[in-house]
Amino acid sequence: MAGNSGEAGGRSVAGRVFAVLEAFDGERESLRLAEIARHADLPAPTALRMVRELVAWGALERQRDGGYRLGRRLWSLGALAPCLRRIRELAQPALQELHERTGQTALVAALDGRSALLLDRLPGAAVQSSPFQVRVGGRMDLHATAVGRVLLAFAPEALVREVTAGLAAAGARHTRYTVVAPGRLARELAAVRRGGVGYARREMQPAYGAAAVPVFHPDGSLLAALGLVVPAPVDPARYEGRLREAGRLMAAEVARSVVAERAAGNTAGNAAGNAASTG
Image 1 (tube, helix red, strand yellow):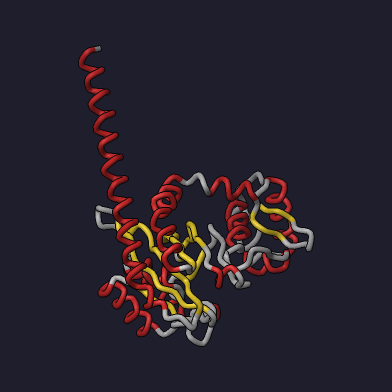
Image 2 (image 1 turned 45 degrees about the vertical axis):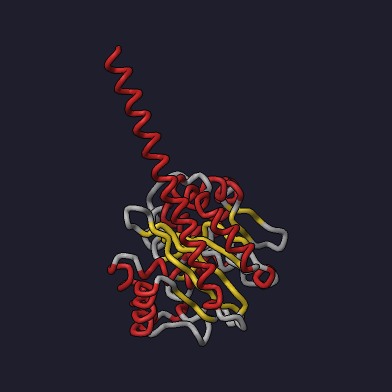
């Protein structure tokens, strides 16, 4: 994939590669070549060339049915991102507790551009049997998911305006319950900021609802959203107490980690100072 000049829409080679990879948005594990070309807005011959190179590199894998999915080499690189890996580690006790106490799907997500990036999840039986599953590393809408709504509620105002402007797009509505009215979304976000919990009922799929809470860093910045997905007959508000407990547990893990890292930094600094003074 040498070179940087572009041919499709004036995009660089890197731009076209990222367009191909971003076609795998988490909602579907496998895509056909025509679907990749359409999502990436590339001519079919260009998409085929990009896909072949990505397969050779290991970023994509060819399946027996002719479709493509993200390759293991790409997943291994993503797992190395220190910040996201650390958030995932810190979420483990809270995820386990939430999953064990509710029997439902527990998940943790972080803000990534205009999406919620799924860092980890422990699936409940109802979601395990569903054909709709966002995989770890997949992206979810900010306006139509509980974790996304929580992340958006505490995001910069410029991002809120950008997402709100996108509500008019054809792909913004997933079910008849999806919130696509700007005023309604603004009220939902205000409720999250006011009450500390966000809900999305049947907005991504009619069969499921969800709730989520924010998890803040000790410096006050939003670190992640901790969520729970339940079958639609169940009101996600039923688990609000458990969810808040799990959120507090994760926040405590984050705080302990920050204190430990600062202590380690101070110890290393003192050792370096002592070595310099005696050198």
